[in-house]
Structures are given as structure tokens and as C-alpha cells.
Image (cartoon, rainbow, N blue to C red):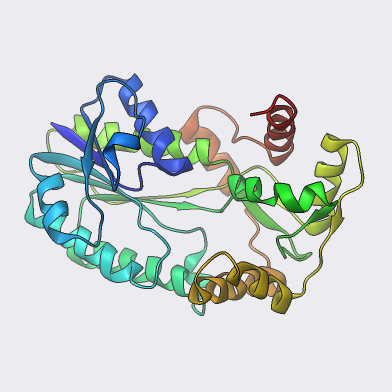
Length: 292
């Protein structure tokens, strides 16, 4: 009985692999570069990617449970639907699919719309899956270090309030759900969990948190989406930069807050309160100061 983890070298996937390995699971991790993956002992790194049907068929051979984390690319939906179909063809008995929090409330955001379509496919086909819907990753803010060094916070999050979540909490719940499905003698019914942090954050609360942790004033770079898109397009495909622009426009106009019920439900699932943004920021600054 084997668990296949896709997206295995990102923050969420790598931590999921680590947690599964620590529980003694038979883990197979899909990666483009197995030799450089650096997975824990006992984890089998297999070469491949979601877009490569031959490598996916090989990776899914004898797999009982799948963690499906698709990249935010122009063909994300095709990759996701193909992986789900291949998993069904291979007789996979359990799937944990990484969706997006409140994805159905932002139909104009391409990578959110992909998640909605994938969830619909899972439901219509009756696939034995857990849908995990995480909010905006706290770890996305690790990329803010150059801006923070200049005294600015650059994500145009706006002022209405939005949930953030630590990817370690996502991985913890993903590993738990994968092991639950792996241990079941029969396919389990559909489950759906929102994965959020305990705080609804705004530009003001985020900059205050970084200012306190760094011991200097951090200012908000502003709500200018033209400037944000242009900056992102210097480092990512223009289509992805525009996708992110649309996402942040939605956050600015409508927010993306988590309810107390969402937080309480996740607390019950994890067995502890979800990690706070303030704790994440303080831990990050300690790591930077220690040269990590």
C-alpha cells in the first residue's frame, strides 16, 4: 500500500512527505529531479510531473492513496483532470485534493476557477476524496524579504480582512487525511475541510506585525494592482501575474475572512489551534537573524 505525493518539493508537499514518513508510511514522491529532492530516508522519489501522462501512469502503479497538489499554471485544470482520471484508472482508493478557500466566491480568478471545476468533477464522479481548501499561505510572505528590507510590505491585500494559513497546518491535515484513507479497507466518502489561520488580516495588521517583529517601521506598499502586476511579470509568466492581480482585486473588494466556525472546525481536526500569523512572523525573523 503506497501513498503518492505530488507537488512534493514545495512548502506544503515537502512537509506532508516528512510527516507521512515519520509515521512509517510507504511514500512515493513525484518530482522532476529525484537526485536533488532531499527527501527523508525511506521515501521513494520518482521522476515525473502531472503534465507527463506516461510518468504519471508509472508513478501511480500500485498506489492506493494520492495527494494531488497541482501547480498554478495555464494548463492547471487539464493537469488536474488528467491526474484524477489516471488515478481512477489505476484503482486509487483515496485522494486528498488541495483546492482553495472560498474558491467559488471568486469565479473570475483563473486558478480559483480551476479548483471549482476539479471539485465538481470529484463530486460528479463520486471519487473517494478529501477536499482541502486552504486560505492564502503565510509562507508566501517569505518572498517579501527584499521588500521588507526596504521597509515595505508588497502584497496588495487591502483592508477588508482575509484569512492566512501556515502551510505546516495544511500538511498536518493532509497527512492525517491521507493516512485515514490509506488505513481504510474500503473507499471512504467525500469530505471537505476549510484550512485557515486564527486571524483575519489587513494591510494595517500585517505591517504592524512585521514592524513589531523587526523592530522598525514597515509600511504598506499600497493597493496599486497595476504596479503589483508589473512587478510580478518581471519574475513570472505574464498570465500568472495577471491571475494574481485578479486574486488580490477580489481580496481588496470583498475580503476573504474566516469565520469563528471555520477556525473551530480546523482546531478540532488538528487537535490544536492553527498557527497564528504573528507566531509565523516572529519565527521567520528569528530564522533570518540566525542566517537561515
